[in-house]
Image 1 (cartoon, rainbow, N blue to C red):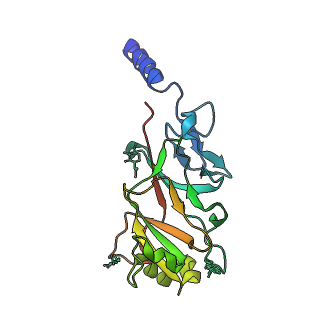
Image 2: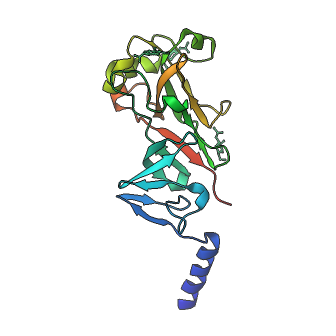
Image 3: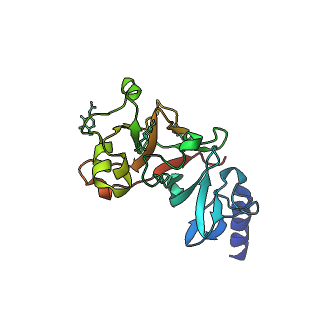
Length: 204
Ligand SMILES: *[C@@H]1O[C@H](CO)[C@@H](O)[C@H](O)[C@H]1NC(C)=O
Ligand SMILES: *[C@@H]1O[C@H](CO)[C@@H](O)[C@H](O)[C@H]1NC(C)=O
Ligand SMILES: *[C@@H]1O[C@H](CO)[C@@H](O)[C@H](O)[C@H]1NC(C)=O
């Protein structure tokens, strides 16, 4: 029996040379996510700051990690705040969310992205900017989006044909965004699951 346990320990050690990281606040940090060089896999870096777990974008912005599902290789980060009295996302100055293409994370296809305060140029692209676009329900029913009311807005589903490393915003394009994971069109906008779901490739 002891030998069996010993052998199991050895095989676990070989699969992942380092173990899972300690909890960050109340959140488990499952392997391969790594808050520290001594645990997890360093390519899957996340940050434990002020008792909360954060994800760093290629643009140098930290996004709060809301949940992790390690068996599905997924985590959900918080969309950026919309700055008070404006329709500007807090990451507008770096052009929105960008993931480092050399890292094993991408934006999953379960996200419906709502683009807010867009210029009319955006109508040329394949987005849904109609009066019943999901972005209208957001602006009309969710307090944070209310400063974007009466501007042009659109939504699209992140699909595999699109870049899975960026949600782009800019002055003169769309200046704010949010995202809904697995949108339920028949539910009220206030109860949607706001977040950006990221997927990771398994360490080999
Ligand atoms: C919408 O974006 C334009 C620039 O594209 C900006 O001038 C305007 O102030 C923005 N509207 C709000 C409500 O922030
Ligand atoms: C836009 O999205 C709404 C909500 O899903 C849908 O009812 C409508 O048919 C869509 N319009 C277009 C042009 O795709
Ligand atoms: C993201 O990466 C996963 C794992 O490599 C892959 O299966 C998936 O197709 C990618 N998603 C997108 C939207 O490119």
